[in-house]
Amino acid sequence: MALGSTATPGAAAPEAVRAHDAAPARSGGAHRDCPSGEVFATNNTAVVTDPADPRLRTRLTRFDREVRGIIRAHGARPGASTLLDGVFWSAGLRKTTFERSREFDVDGTGRDGLRHLAGVLAKRYHQESVLTFRCLPRHAPATDAARIEAPGVSAAALREALRTHPGAREELGGGSVTEDGRLVLVSPLEELPLARKFTKDLGVDWNTAEVRYGEREFVS
Image (cartoon, rainbow, N blue to C red; front, top):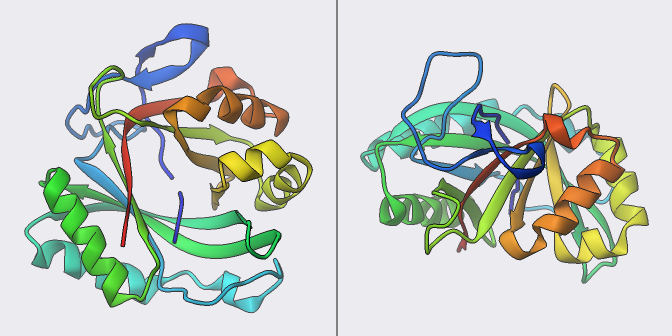
């Protein structure tokens, strides 16, 4: 399973959160608009509990190429791909686990196509589940999640925060960090207040966070 990444412009929202209330077309600016969907995936099948494990240094380059080919083969268009360091809490092991993954922007597909693609990836790479996210208006009936991205966070800081925040690790499960130090959380909508508090406790200025609302799904 993988959780993870991206940034976006948007109109001002309550409490200075910048959020997408729609899924506009891709622009050529410094930030990315919402793609048709996002897939968070990895080819890792091991449970890694040591943050110094050499397997966490992989750049998943071959995996990146393979997934792009799979996206095209299923009639969609691959967009940007972002390398992520995932930090997750294992309720079964009662400890933190780590995972390298990639977030793939996917264009030219809808809900069913995104779900099908995630199912193909889950089976191909023997994953328990693959996370998808699809931007939707804030009050759309299917909206059930918020995707938060914020600068200034390291994987080590995220690991320590999960260790000291029982509520966040139990309810949010964990998150991911990009190479340039951007936190990525995909939170259930009802846990958004907790996600906001957790993000602020990490030292992030909430005014710099970018929030997308939409639908998330774990596809197996």
